[in-house]
Length: 442
Ligand SMILES: Cc1ncc(COP(=O)(O)O)c(C=O)c1O
Image (tube, rainbow, N blue to C red):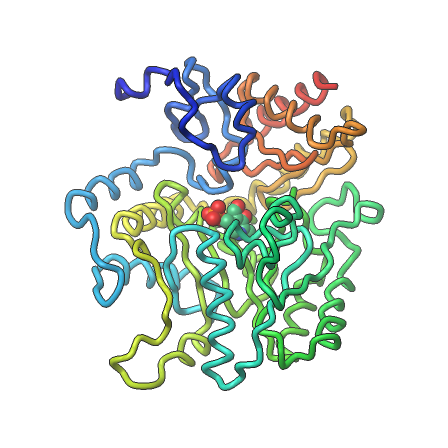
């Protein structure tokens, strides 16, 4: 370990931390200085079990050798190549490797550097696609209440988490929202996808009647909503959305930033649910979270629609300086190798029943009002403290960290999404930590 990592900085003021209670953090910092496989090590030398794969991204576990080596050797060989009008071999190799594991028909990839950028890319592609097809009136975007699609203006406009929207003005115009699918009165403590609520997809028909299909470019949803606190699609809901989109010529975008790369026990949620979108946004697990990267998958018809006009002309005026950065590509190739060698893209399927039982064993523990699970995702919803929403879950988070487990909370919901290498013993350990924490908080 480098010397720099052995000392705890004594001045924390300059760094304005993202999505963090800065003042609270700086009074009692929680620092990780190293990580290996399923564990972090804190600055005071404690091991912490990673119950959240970092931020839903470290699907293969930490500091995996294939990924580390790939980054090291790429950094020494080709550090950067211009992303526009120039290429380098491994970005093409990576695109092919990704298409090989993508749902059938999604055979082109556009690279970005984050989930937020993947979302902006997908929304722009959808609007531009209709325009190049001669349907320039299709500019309206439909998101969903409680949806999370990153933090850029397009993403928060189609997103539906009020705290992420209310401070930022009028956002994009021409956006509407479907209702969310959280129905605790009917579906609480469901194991896997809930029975009730598929009819909520019919709300899309209502929006089509209101706005007319000729004005709607795309619908974007997370197949399983993650950041809002894990909301599952009711049985048949995604199939219905697909049917309605197809019927009206509306593109369906799945935001698979969390669900992509094995989280549900299948490579993508599209595979898990048997529903193929027109565009699929990914990030996080594509490079195991190690180097920022995102990838937008598109169907051939969409890609091909742009490939017209004079050949010397740029077809899509969009891209990032770091789209397909060589070191990020190397990290992604190392990640895909690791997933393949260890069967991680489908390992969740084997573990899911064990995970489900372990998670639902928390039913009846203090404060628990709902438990939800799918693949290797779990959510434990707590009753909020009257007048102080989020406080109970936040104290669970801090207590869990002190006891040796990293969990994540949003609102009063604990969300769990461990690396896909977790063992059954570690599942027990994680759930026992949560149980102890629930018994110890007010
Ligand atoms: C579904 C979804 N979309 C987009 C994003 C944004 O990704 P990023 O933080 O990499 O911009 C996230 C992040 O959690 C996400 O869960």
